[in-house]
Every structure is written in C-alpha cells, then in structure tokens.
Image (cartoon, rainbow, N blue to C red; front, side):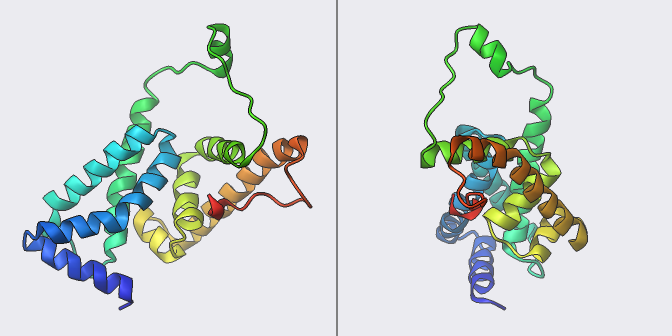
Length: 198
C-alpha cells in the first residue's frame, strides 16, 4: 500500500470511530482538489464550494459504508462527481442567455489582452464546453493526474473507455483553442499552453 493510501485509510478508520479531528484532516487533504475539479466542470466557484461541502457531509454521514478494499480518493471523487453531474442535469432545465443576448441587453463582455489570466479563461471556457463524459475523464486524468485505472473506477467504465475519452477531450480542446491562440499570437511554435500548469 502506498503512503498516501495508508494515510487515507488510517484517517478513515479514525473517522469511522467518530474522530472529528481525523475528518478535518481528511477534508484538508481533498478540499482544494475537489473544489478545483468541480469548478472546472460547473464554471461556478460558489457552487463548487457548496458541492464540496455536500461531498464531505456525505462522506461523514456514510462513513461506516466505506469499503477499505478501494482507494478512499476513488470513493470521494465518485461522490463529488455524481453531485456535479446532478447539478449539470438541473441546469439543462433552465434557459440561459447567450453572449449575443447578453450584449443586446447591455451587459458588457470583457475582451482582455491574452495574459495568463485570459489564457486560463480561454482554457476554462473550452473545458466547460466539453461533453460531460469527456470533461470528467479529462479533469481526473490530466488536471488531477490520477492514474487511468483509478479514473476508470471513479467513472465506472472500462479502462479503454477512459483512455478514449481523455484522448477525445484533448483533441477537442486542441481544435477549440489552437485557432484562438494562433490568432492572438499567444501560440508559439505550434504548442498549446499545458493544461497541468493551471
């Protein structure tokens, strides 16, 4: 068992004995990563933070259900991603204004020069447009840098499917971003900004 998994299991055993200090340590280990991945799925910081709180509430409530034969990170990411997917389903029921509608209604749309924050904004926009099945696989593998095998467990799909979805997400992002970056002059020597630096 690797060190990280051993630490997680040690904390979870204490959590199952109602040790709230251990639970807080567990929250500290995962909170930032979960907020990051959910934010990139929903593009809403407040909603991401709310869903992470809900994730940890469920971890605490169902602490006795945890199966130690699995990685704790797999269990926690699965809870968080299911909550994020439910939120995305709810959002589809509502009609959102397009950028054109917003501009016609007098909402100013920023057009910043492409500095680091603007590049991050372009990338976040491209990620947010990915279909959910590609987005979650891409976020877990390329942003969170989880092993393909763990991503497959979290998503409940075969390993080959995960690899296919990650490759498809990368291709879609490249096709989406490359013309914009070339047009702005931000793309040097034909390479895209590395996703993992965000």
